[in-house]
Length: 103
Image 1 (cartoon, rainbow, N blue to C red):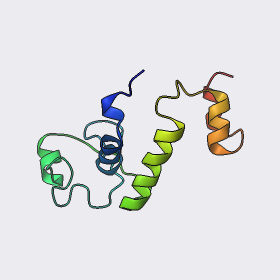
Image 2: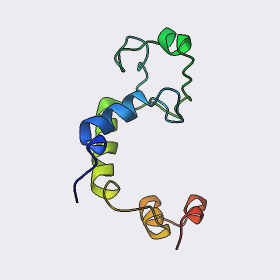
Image 3: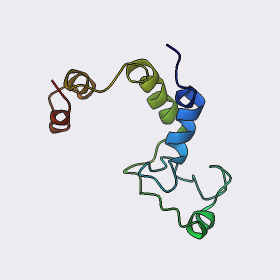
């Protein structure tokens, strides 16, 4: 089985850093749309194209983004759908979020 090319390390880094304009994925880079570093777009470009971006709960450094991606590639990508067991392993306990996954 081959890995979905959109889920390679570089694409995951860009997605977490820049989010997905017009979707529910926020940008975790504090300056993502301040200087055109993401998709060549600035805040004004997003507004003119009527693309909204949810606010990220926190921003991440480049090193933190890369650590998240490395974790995803080892533990999540290519590992099949999320399950209750995997969710508990991820969070370290049976948190409420895990109840939405099949046991």
